[in-house]
Length: 129
Image 1: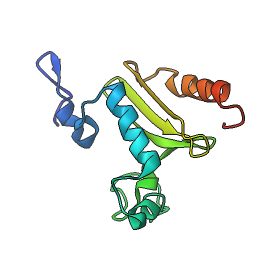
Image 2 (image 1 turned 180 degrees about the vertical axis):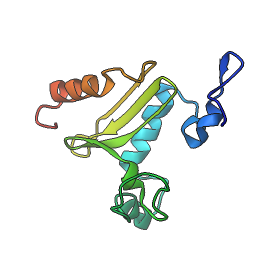
Image 3 (image 1 turned 90 degrees about the vertical axis):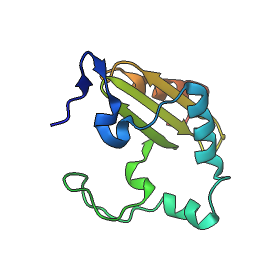
Image 4 (image 1 turned 180 degrees about the horizontal axis):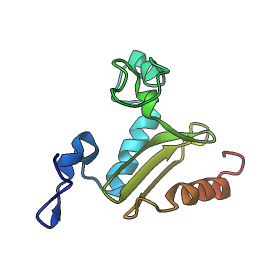
């Protein structure tokens, strides 16, 4: 029912949580460093974030209990999170071995962003993918 547009302008609120955050690459990088370092959460929460509480395939309805790891993104040993809404795609990854972070954003949902991130990681950190 709710359309993604109201008039001629995109209303990201219609995508619920997917449209609930506006960010920049700089802020994504800070958030990715926090994902890597876990300075804002307890040791117990650090363990829980990598735990999958449900192996149920995502669908309708989603599982009633699951860990953050359910929505994680990984490329080789790189770990992080991505998101998309109405033609926009973002990704933030960190390498737990080197500590490096890699963030990208695209205005095309069908973009080769993941392939570009993979190639950058392979070039700068051989063997990490």
